[in-house]
Length: 384
Image (cartoon, rainbow, N blue to C red):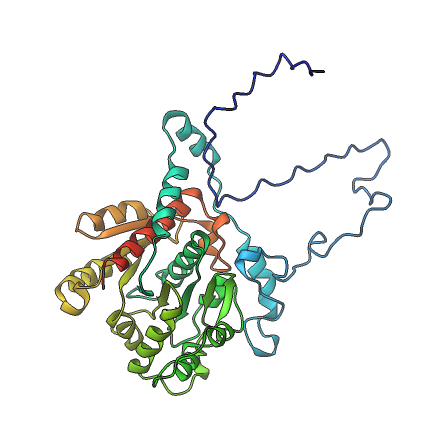
């Protein structure tokens, strides 16, 4: 017995092309049931008979990161400092980590009416480029010439992209001698500092895969990260030669190792990372002072033999929503100078400075991050 078809609905064509969705777009929120209020009922309806009691999150109380996405790692209560000093920040971390990119529904709707939006297809193509096989572990140094440029954000973002599109495991190492924010951006705790890795991976010593897995924190099943180096509580500085040797040894276990360097090209950690790096990402803030400094440093990069041989990509990040200097325009200026330049405009999720999650980025920013990841890996693979 056949079921008559509803004449109000057009027949479904099984061979029609299906729309290409953004694989990192957040899942649609469940629809909320609207309850009618009967006459004489209070403004706040009581719980239904047999309904469970309200959870702490529903009651408005801040919770920890126990319910965070599995691919984003987790932060338990009291993370961030010994003795639970980080506990007061947990509510802020949760709020900022869940802040999505600013809504621009009307401009996007108008754009889709008059132009063909290829963001999703471009993202898939760039993701395929970031999946390229490697012969040996590639080390990519992420550098900047000033603090607050967004260098650690870029390192964490690239780590997330490689972990999302690759089946193997990527790593991000925090080389900042102070208390870097890489662990905060990746949502990790308990990772050993690179100084500890030096003790296990220098002088002819090579840790086993199991040892290394126990030393590094896991921001995702296939994304490992080192912890902060301690800041003011740190001991004697690790010699640059030892740091260089440890990074090279650790990178043997990962196809891609990102090195989050301290600000300044003259920093010993930065020079160690660039000495053996297969590629570099230069992060520039979309500010007048940042751009002025970047143009000077990029010109010097070309004139320095040790740096000119390193494949370089430039990422312009915009942290101020109201800034008249748009990241895309400034990246265009840099590309006209002969550099590979990429841009990520203002994004509320990135600007929050907390746990970084790809689904909460604007689609065009996910596409830009994937394009950068693909290009940088291509450059790193081209250098022996």
